[in-house]
Length: 257
Image 1: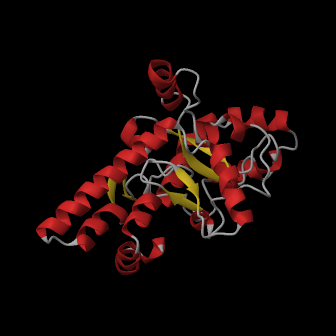
Image 2: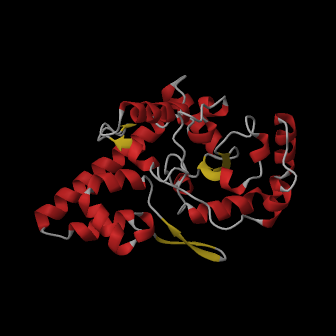
Image 3: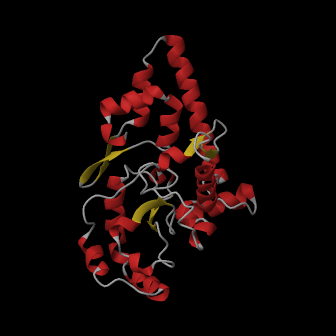
């Protein structure tokens, strides 16, 4: 998870809707459904700020045909007045049209009753969330709560206080960030980086160049724009390369430090 903050005021249609915010969960659901024709514009704006990464899992959902949906960081059922509030929105992996059916097939084929949905579509996130214990992507220090393991799992940063570790564990559980689907993809990436690092060390190639290719933005053409994008699991790769990653970011992408 990395700190994400949307820029600007958001699309005009969103600002207009927020001028008279909903006051109940029912009104929020009804008006959000009626906002459907504007949602893709909102998603595009959010993804530009997020470098195409899912706000919670850091998955490039477009690489896997999973699509994105607009996530309410503070659930609109709990806080209906924030339904159209630009700072409360983020782009999250798994669209209802593409992502959920694909993961449903994945679960049916190999995982039985294990929940593979994650992020905003995780069952626990759709219920009541305790914001006092939830690590928000709006927290500039949010990345420091978590650690990534070579087996693909995500856990609390053991260098943090017990209270912070508990918050990290709660957030991972609520968002199902150790969904078997994500764990498999992260483990594959770790193994790939391990093999690349060993090859570069063996052949005397530049580790800095390897790191730069993995954690700095590159262009993605989405007509009519050319958007900056990152590879999936930026924070995992950043942790993997350690000090080399920090030096690389300071030199080539200071906005990501």
